[in-house]
Image (cartoon, rainbow, N blue to C red; front, side):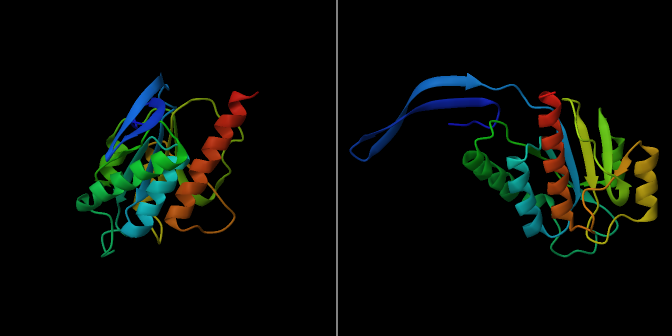
Length: 198
């Protein structure tokens, strides 16, 4: 049993006629993991739903659909009305992968408003020309911004640069938004694992 807030319960399923119940044997609480915030251009909602599902497996703690200039013209973009479905998708992935913490899936937010939020720790923006991510990380918070299909415009990149976001490359080719986001999360998870086993 997982509640998505750090509690893991183990027990046995009991069948009594048509009634089912679970007898809990042990309950364990797992500390909240290091904060990993993912803000991604709110493009096609089906591809974004896949991104949410896989982000649970890779340890994202917060997911923000970003409204940018290039997402405004996408008819199938993520809107607030899709949040319940995205959160359900996250909870289903939680059960499958055994992650005790569900990520918070936030309402769509403009890039300007997102940058105005407090973002402690490392701040990265996905950019093909950027530096590679570090090989080792501690439990320091990491915030990653991934642009939509077509990328961020010059003004959006300048805004992120002024807010202290460093350009980081997550592959040798131009990646679709969901691929770039998952590559970032996988890199962060691997770097934290290496950092914890120095």
